[in-house]
Amino acid sequence: MSERILIVARLSPGSAPEVARLFGESDDGELPHALGVRRRELYQYRELYFHVVDFDGPAGQAMAQARDRADFRGLSEELSPHVAPYDPATWRSPADAMATRFYHWTPGGGAQ
Image (cartoon, rainbow, N blue to C red; front, top):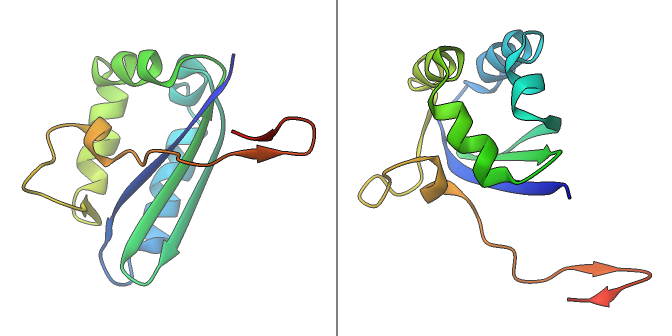
């Protein structure tokens, strides 16, 4: 079963092009394939950063695998001047930046 996550963080002013470039380089490599990433979308609203990722399987499992990979740690380090935790006081890992879905609707399934 596929899963989607939404990561919310702060984006440094003017950093969107560099963040897109860094993800573009990473997504051309093996990392997204190794983690089962089906789609990635990045959004910006003022200084907020929204990162939507669809995985082939459980997102938590993919994120756990990511932490053990040098390419993921390298990407995270390269992103650090541009993307910061939304709430630095409570941030311990990427899981602390994941939004919680509280409403879902589909034509065939209705509201959930």
